[in-house]
Length: 634
Image (cartoon, rainbow, N blue to C red; front, side, top):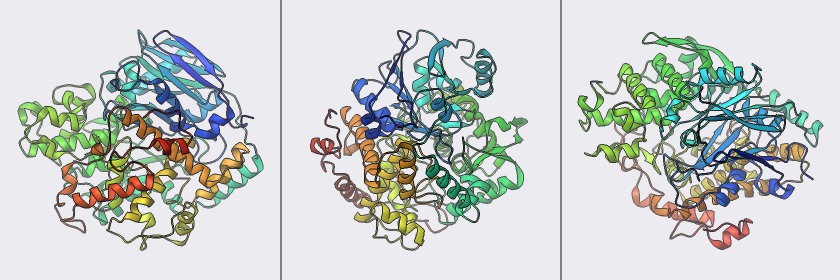
């Protein structure tokens, strides 16, 4: 029997031929993949030919929620989007929250599989078990706020309609373009917005009235109550008050706040872009995702360069504060807030956009690019006005922005003259704002992760290091088979095993579409055992932690196979040379760097932990068979 918490329906959309049909997967399919990007990968591996370009119409894109999405409990309203990435050339993966995920579930479907390219711009309208393609030519070229209003008006003005859309940057082919919902929730990183726009699909609008029911409503209510009661006096209360912006100062204190394009680990202006400063100055509200009690989303109002920052576009989180702040040497929080708004209006990833600009600033300071290339913009670290000017050029693909819109790795190849020395990327994706020089396992994660440098694919080192882990953390680590806590500041073979084990856990959360800030180990709301209790209450299945972890492992292996089909192997599990050079500046990480020989050795330990072939770094036929993936061709 299909669990009561799922619809048992997947929508297929052939944009080329304007055809839509429904599929009813078996219960075994749901139990094997859980939903989210694991379920998406099953369709992608079946229908996407190897070797195609990311902008080829044959690049299948999937949009899936999880089995428990839409239930009345914190941290479940997430949606995963997958396709081949135009930024990296490997598999793309992107997660977002908000109200769209739950509304998609209410509309009668558990996911959407999208094929081909429409002859003209369209949007997909899904409502109470029905779906249709509608003309979007009037919305094409509009910023997200304008097009969302137009779509809702076109559908009768129902405020409960949720819209997932691409902005003008995606339409112009910016390779790190997002998919936005609520104008401030982003399926960011890996350029899924650029893929969607290449299909002439402007948006997916959803509305539904179906009630999602848990198999055990009483147990679900008890878990929800327990979670709410755990917030006061815990890290979740800090998450409510400051969101992720609350870690700016702690990252800076440890020497792990990327500064001036990852050349330093401490920023003298950190206080000015901190969560505390945001709360004191420009924060006006805290927003939430569907049914979530944490309310961690920032909402700000301010202005910079006579441009108003509208509450509609949310506010900057930690990664954005770092990318447009310390990465670029900028300490004006108003400028960072405006940059965040521009990204949300035009639909681009804030981490990549800020990192690309920081890369260009270093190139400018080293005279690799000059005022001629920047068209008169004095693109130096610390110049907030220059940062905003070049950001507009990127989202509109004007001048130097046309090159930077390719991402820094491609831009470096175009620019030449030593520009590659200024890169801070993994698999061609810009490194997020957690530094491997401070958190040693992250360097390995940034290299081996199937979709490039990412900070939300495994636990960070401090969680399982002896000096940082509290009793609750130890209990939760033990639940997923981690008992040997590790020393700080060193990379060990056991850390490589732990990295893969926590990567399995995070991968499972991305398959069930659960928020990492609510479900996991780092925060005290819910741990691995409670994840299993929740999934049991939701589905009625007698799940175990091992089965949940296996779903996460299955997802990682499918992504790795997707890359291997295109010829990727351990040679691409690498990082920019910048990570292997001593950090500059002051502070605890000054002079610290990653060691190349140790890095290569620890990669072998990681492959062993994953059960992969050491020579290629890819899954084996036998390993895939053990995961029930014998149907996958590598």
